[in-house]
Length: 204
Image (cartoon, rainbow, N blue to C red; front, side, top):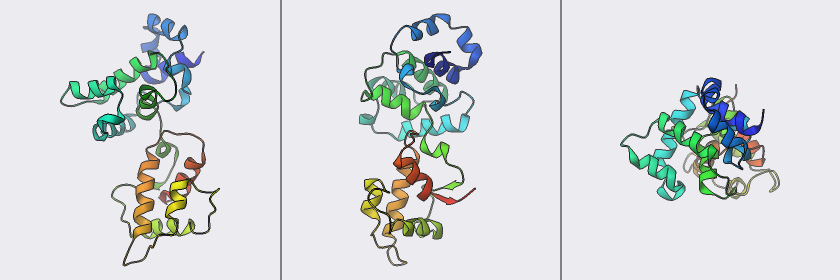
């Protein structure tokens, strides 16, 4: 089974793909977005919580961060829904691949696929995590002796911030980075390793 077919099945399920022969035929014979995404990195149709989270990310995104077609879908209805997003994902997977810098491709990876947080177990840093949280402070302290090769640039740049009871700048900076990193598309990388190491406040 080729990548395009697997990608489609991941989103709509086997029954939907079986009834969509024309759709699959077109996918197989064109260089589509789905052919340039690992199908195992796409959300499954039954992962309701993750789909709902993606919808919230889209609602919070600035217009400049969304492709024209996704922005149009978002603005077309007063309440952009999970079903709307799934429909957009399916249509986008069938669309032509224009390169990895294409905003539509990037939006598919971000909103139709798994992110860093999905691959990390335990209690993760969230917007409700206090900057004075003891475990967050422990994680920040671990940055101190790390080299530039061991940390992504943004983490390396904050590791010497003050993090005391009078000024939790270190905890605040790490929290901000973690929230952003946890919502990045999943990719085996230094960013993923750093997110796993410093953005979990309760290990499983």
